[in-house]
Length: 139
Image 1 (cartoon, rainbow, N blue to C red):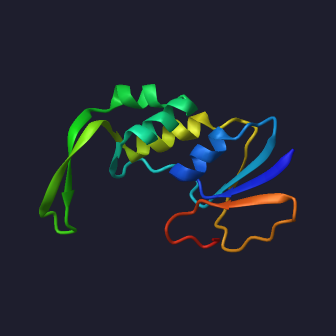
Image 2 (spheres, rainbow, N blue to C red):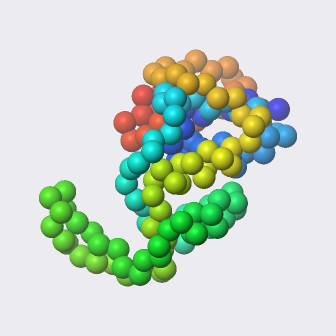
């Protein structure tokens, strides 16, 4: 089996951990938070994201919790409206709900480590993926 270490347990890290075949990959997921957040922003789930979430088996549960939107406003940091974009029937999903759904889809075989990772030393036969956000410490 190939060893895979995923640094970051947000949307990307959890989705990857849920998608990797546990019979082919020995996965370790490192996340600095001990618990998932209870609140946060909402995200519009566009068709490509919907397809990925359907493949992971989590979209139906999210769609049941979420309203569908047909327009998406673009706003400045001060909240001033810039424009409204039509959407192809996107779902509006709370970030916390998305994180919890992805977390539930992660196989029990995934090793979880609660720790902040700032530096990675990997062997030549190990794959390390930095999914620790836009201000990544490991990329």
